[in-house]
Length: 235
Image (cartoon, rainbow, N blue to C red; front, side, top):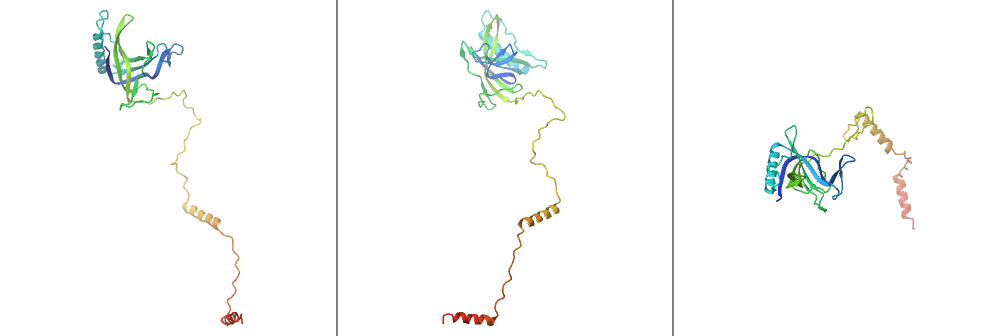
């Protein structure tokens, strides 16, 4: 009988859930691999307090006793690692494939239960809930209960940091972004206004226009004679 259980509010350690990984002896670290590759798996280690560890072990013990074979050890051995600060660490794993059949990738959701992106990479230090299946087993003469990873809920996400191999160097190039709020040098307002007026005079000053003196209007007597001439034009 397979029993489901949720481990709440634990610290994620070296999670590898975005795809399957396997330990590479050449580089001495876990590397991405095909789901059917040897030792391919999804995994997450986690750190929990004493109360959480006690509750989880009680569930594992119940599952063990319910599925215990007569040849198995009577008592379940405690598989947790106790840290110096009084916390405990353990690991949940899901193989990339069982009997050649590729497994379904563990679900990753946010605190509201919404699906996270397919390529989401959980980080060490994040706070999570881990859903597992308790699977009692007998392997190599040893019996225990494995935690088969099914899903992870991210409660608090710690952004991934990029490793910088360099330190600070004195007197070197420094990136300085332009400050849109930088204060411009103050100028004398009176002088500035005066200069502006001078500039306007220069810009809008028109070339002098030559004006021709207007001829004087004819005297009243002359005007009368002119009208008479026009009136008698057709005579």
